[in-house]
Length: 509
Ligand code: FAD
Ligand code: DLZ
Ligand code: SF4
Image (cartoon, rainbow, N blue to C red; front, top):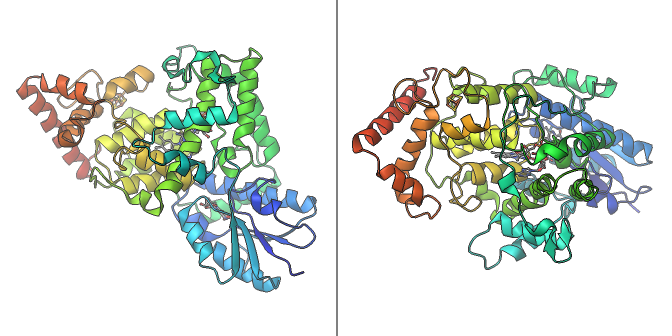
């Protein structure tokens, strides 16, 4: 029998993936390829490229040790054609293969490229998730609103996670109202474990340094886990030391501490080194053993079987045009400070700086600092989407796009978010220590020292009046704004307009 090619992509590093399950160790050839098209479709953070390539190399080594034949293309191999389809065609000829078995990629671009190949191609479902795109489509059918909360409750029932019979554990589905505390001043959250580079990782780091030195982002120090064993160590550490406070301080932001009480497992989940159900079962077991409170376990599990599954459902349900949506008609280009240029806004500077250093920011930093600014300032959502896809080590389009286009930028007209995630500086001041030492004053509402978030918030509210006035969750905001003195309102909007004009001329703002 002729061999078949078994494709394993850089974010499909699970031994139980559907393509490998269908394969025959004696007959088939596993193909893995480091290629320039994947390394350059956006200017990825160097840590992200290094993480993906190092984890791919380790995974290939483990497969070989397990008896598989692996055709592995390194980025600098002379014969490397530079793309996944190119490598499939090249290897098909090398091994006299006519058929390719793949697990469906997590991006429309690559799904289409595989379908265009002059080879027999079988794309199997990626069943490493708790729900399938079909489950989501069935759930969505006939619903007016596709709200995450209702989806999440169905997944709780389906999986039995945090269920006592038919009822949610503790009597409530969601404990989010307990999860909004700022960090205590003397907090010392335990740092997640780091892994100093061994020879495999060091070689990849040299390659990335040579080829991608111009990309935004700091390559060293590199301490991410690059195989399942190390990823499990990160998970163990989180469950034992960090989960108990995860719920309480989930939304907190602190200067100089990027990780706080977060799990920092999204890169490993998204590469396939960890699986969503195992992670959730660990959190539930910690709660049932009395080692973590319910608000922490529920908050964590909701992020994974709620948000993570839901955004994947949205991505595949909405189709390839989702990333070009722009319902608010925003078109301002990304300011230079997104790529490390100077800004006087201390919060933005801090989160961009941390992103440059680590390729990581937690959810509230992404949503309520960077995303909030982008939405208030009317930045082009397509550019914002490409930025998020580039700069975070966990960024793959199926998860990044609905979070950016939908949740953060409201560019899908409220499909994901029931109201835009915008706030004045007050929210950032309450949840972080960023305003200390900022050149702007968060308590000042107009004038040169006014916090730009304060100005832009009302500019946003005013310029989108027609769209949001009748949104039930926004009505109270318009009522309070409209009660203000006309002159005061005009002054705020004029100051915001001036600030945006200065931003547009490239002045440091
Ligand atoms: P924790 O806070 O410890 O949460 C645990 C896990 O829950 C995460 O590892 C992640 O797998 C999951 N999770 C939490 N929130 C979400 C969410 N909104 N969507 C999907 N999964 C979630 N997450 C990505 O994995 N990749 C992305 O490219 C990405 N882009 C984002 C862009 C924007 C604008 C926003 C607002 C959020 C984005 N997120 C993305 C979601 C979230 O910010 C990250 O999952 C989280 O910060 C990862 O860090 P952690 O592992 O420490 O998460
Ligand atoms: C992100 C990424 C990078 C940087 N490099 C590779 C690569 O060289 N080879 C590969 O197979 N995958 C890579 N990836 C991950 C893919 O971009 C990812 O599989 C698709 O975006 C689908 O999610
Ligand atoms: Fe950010 Fe405004 Fe606070 Fe400065 S004052 S850190 S711009 S919220």
